Image (tube, rainbow, N blue to C red):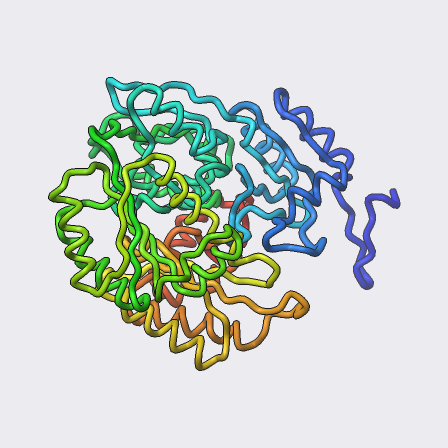
Length: 474
């Protein structure tokens, strides 16, 4: 009896079930997957190494599902015991969107990683959520197709996580974010039903668009068990990639705005400020800092002379210097690696917060000016990079490793950036999702009426509030 009694002041709470009974029932429901309850595994899967360091949210169990039946079994146990469920894929969230909650079931779909079908005829792939983005792309390319969305985490992030966060990335400027490439889903709801949404047709106008409701819902409405995505044919010809340097990020942003509407249809327009370039030089052993100001990495799908000449002319009109282009695959791989290594280069040896605002294209240059001036005003080191072609900017504020508390100036600077973003008509979450870190800004960005509707939608799909509580919406 003692194990089932908890003192609460003058009251005594009689627990209906012990943890042992709950875990035993959970294991009975998970017939194909594996249930972990050891402390080492729970700590590893409850706390993102990028964000968390304490034990305040240790999960009750970590489940690696192997099938839809396993996912349904976890939801059955969660409903019986009123236990929160935290959907998790490859656990690469940057916003604490998949960290464990105290006493929760962390439900991982990373072992559901089969590519079920690649259809050239229909230009689609059907995959389980644990399939790695880059692995899908590689498999598609073996059949003359490719999967376009390219998050910076392409080699490590799963399709399920990409769907949950509506991941963007470097190719969004031409091919769109994840939402623009998802045609259909299968989702297990909080009540255990698996529903099928959308399909494999490129057009679909029947019923409400529930497919897109679940894209970007961060596991708060259901658990994705299957995804049907668009594939694209590999373009004819050799892609062209290059770099150019500008006096500052504002000049670069102005050039990007012109390139974006020029008709050359770039597949990549990536911006790095001088501080980020210097960090990359130190990390990679390169010498890009020998050039001045900001760096633009650009790419187009072919090497048509008229397209390349147009690009060079537009950049030159905005003061670009030392512009070079290449069709060599190895050199292009080096440039792509340079962009992907931006984060470890900037993060190395210092505390950091990276943000994720997206601006209307016409407001990117003013935002660059604002961030620069804010860094000087607050005396903060701010690295700025981003997917300039779609207005997505990633300012990273750093401070010394020995300072364990986030400096007040950093907090104030982030708040000012958020307010400025909204003032300019942007969003404070372009592609990293909301998670725990920014869900208190829903009312500020969306307005009271839409904020209320968000909660009503959540209550409809998850009336017991079991799925990823405290994330996406507060």
